[in-house]
Image (cartoon, rainbow, N blue to C red; front, side, top):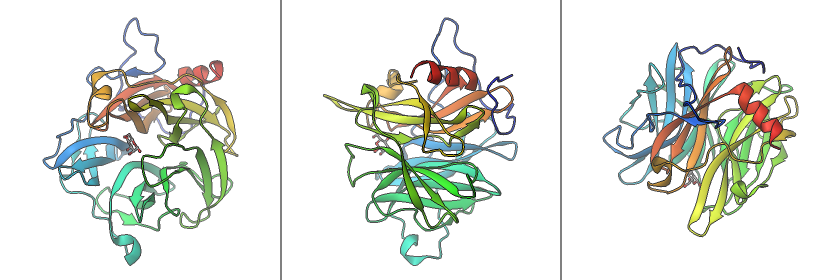
Length: 326
Ligand code: BMA
């Protein structure tokens, strides 16, 4: 039983593995990583930074599949156990009646969020530069694309799973047109998921592991201690960027206020499948499954911009870690 109260449903069938004997890590990796190989569908060069949610007693998701032309595409997928995935061989063909928005340039780093009565997908959408695309689905077959949330340049758009004070809320990360050498997390509000405003700064770079830029990861998890946010942080080494992830607790009603933030990372690229691939040294989380009853958490993250991996933790332990390691 989780001591920290998690708002949400029980999810007894989610992927899970106990902490390996002898390990003291707050977050531990799935022993059979990666869960999704780079060549799971015929056209894929790599499948990573992908989003997974509970769906009709099983699981569904939106996957970043870079194809063998190295075009960045989004594909839907389904799984009974969250581990073995059937990913559609064809990319999602978004339905969109706004001609200016309908021309798909590229899409990457999706997140999926259930709000009220449907799943919303947010992703980094090419529109004269990267911005945040939004679409909704109820069946993971038909996806209805809406207006982009912001002007370019923006990345890492992550919705909260309920309205806060009557407004939809999205974390996002203003950026540039390239491999952005800066970046703080902001939060924006909307009455209708179309018009976004009331932009607030949430947090900036702080500790060495995240000193270049940060960006929100999975959909925040509502707990009695605040919104549990996992986020990636980037260090610039002499060999380029290093992507790790850490966690913070945001205020439940004013989520731009950071209540606690852990100084150390939770997971940094150390295994071969995180260190070797199309982009070395990347662990990039985009989704988390949570069993509200036990507080078990399964975090899906991309490894080296090549494969999709899983790591586990417990809400109680991660909340305690955040509070004790400020
Ligand atoms: C970011 C995004 C991510 C990627 C990361 C590391 O800018 O492109 O998809 O994982 O860089 O290359």
